[in-house]
Length: 88
Image 1: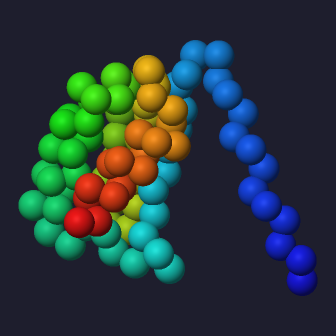
Image 2: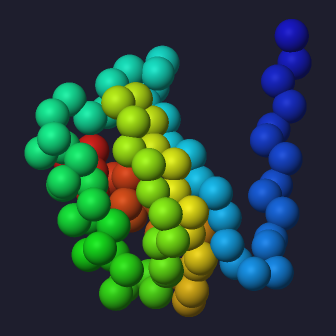
């Protein structure tokens, strides 16, 4: 089976996106309430750096839904910052 590369993300005119982050093999990423609080702190911290707006979020046990508008920083770079910081 030949795997094709992922199709490039279409840029939104509004710069608003529904983002979903999921644990590897759908593993839990939030074990305790403190984990959720830490993730939200990270989102707030990087808002100043990346200049994005968070309109809504839903933190589930094994994934996250975010509705975000991106500012000066590229969506990929901003999400890399957030997810890397949370993992560490």
